[in-house]
Length: 210
Image 1: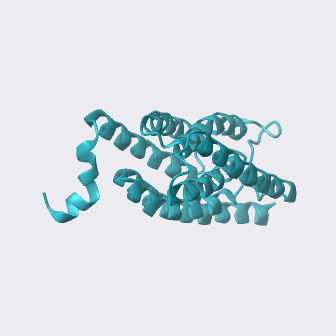
Image 2: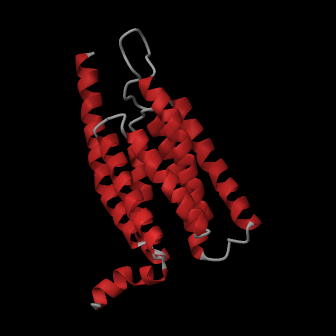
Image 3: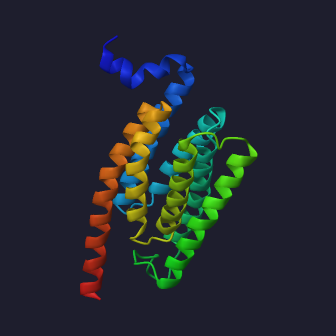
């Protein structure tokens, strides 16, 4: 085994084959989910639900509670987002891409702060507040909670939260030993950047023609 391969994937020697396969499948559907989101395609939600359901199982098995809660929340918000994206605001128009209002920005701050406290309490309860990764997990969980809520409501600012969270998650998941998931977040970072640009272009076009 080459040193590079050992460095990237050596930790998988200790994993069950089924878990490796499940992680790869979850990563693939996670990629499709983010790609569909960039395309403003409602398939973002069913693809995301498959990915998050698998990750909830794996992360619970690996006792990574913060990451597990993120994915459980994603699953729930995917159901909510699926409803919002298909809801008609009038007789002929679905919920459009818009900028977050001042009220929604305030809600974002509230969600962020509440998530920090919630994850901290969970980690302390299960005696998982034992390393620096717990601090980072808490922070990224709060970021992703806000990002998912804004995406479900079709707010362009969701991409900013995704970009920040993805950049942090790349080295974090690699450090934890989940190379495939780390690669996923690496790809997610670039898709999120292009997603923001695509949504911004669409929003500007709508504003010009309005």
